[in-house]
Image 1 (tube, rainbow, N blue to C red):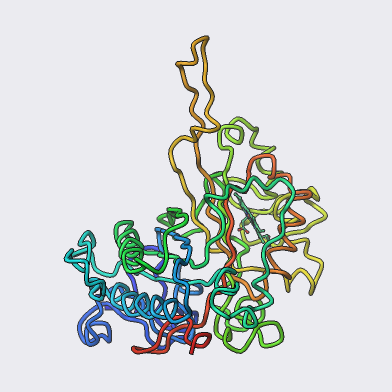
Image 2: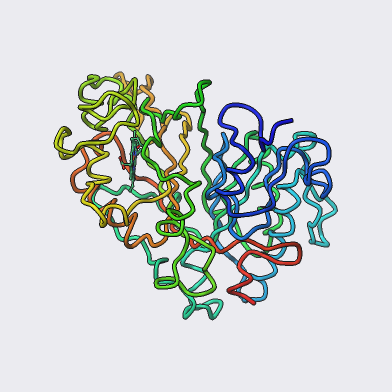
Length: 417
Ligand code: HEM
């Protein structure tokens, strides 16, 4: 048995993962391993740690993202929900069923059952607190972190209220779609009486067999110049909450910006290769920046159109650009046809030309969205050539509190006491 935490392409060494997560509690595969000893299934990623898992831990193949509205009206009921969620999340991430459904009225099985026998599948559950937690309901307004500012409107936004906002979020990632789905479903059951589902997004990302950079729904390699989640100094500078902008209760945490971005794939697929490549600023096949040869070659802005996506996203103006950089951890989606934008054809309107509802569930972790996402997105909305091919239709911003150190602790404990 090697020291890998998980098998298959993209598996990283255990040491690297420990380094990346900054957490000394990651399970390994076989006999004698701490996962077995603690009752966790092989392939599990520990729920407990300094930071929440699902930020710098390796990206799994599947996403179920869920945003909730809190219906509880008291701080103690909100706290009780986060306690229930944290206890159950530790079980689910260890590959155990949900065992803590507390509602007396329910004679239903405590776990819905569809993940039985599937193991942990690398499940991570990452919880976030939206702006609504800090409104008048819970007396927490003075604890609201300044970086959790409401996102401003951006030019071209087509936000659908049914895909926007949320008082709480759960990002469930796993290598098995049913495991991620099961986790959100059982957390939603547990929320009964305290929170209701507001919107949800499923996603996927497939790693090529050669272990190379995955491709997004535009067919381009996505993540080439992402931050390195294993670079601790970089995570401290750009991702983890900092004492000069965040309250003490957020230290060890981070901020998540979620955007459901529709890609107009029909329009994109009928555009020339040259147009596609100048929109992104990279070659489609190799991922090399225009004017260079290899994917990892440095980007020379003088050799790219100024409105190419990678230049507008990162103008490479030195320290200021470096401070803006974010940790992207998004997933593709393909949700069938969009009935609203699909076209009716023929005199009687009976024939339909369906338009695909595909795109990117953009998820990015950062130290301060005011300095990072908002600055970048304001530029992209004003002058990104790629804009013609996409529309932001959903949005959310969440404070991701620090990790839960161990059993008995809960998400948000540093805030709620
Ligand atoms: C559907 C929408 C989007 C698509 C298809 C897309 C696609 C891509 C691709 C193909 C790359 C080049 C490979 C890489 O370095 O990862 C890239 C880079 C990047 N994108 Fe996007 N992107 C989208 C939206 C956004 C948004 C909303 C933001 C932030 C507000 C963003 C920020 C970045 C950044 C920072 C880079 C790296 C630039 C660099 O340093 O070279 N992207 N994107």
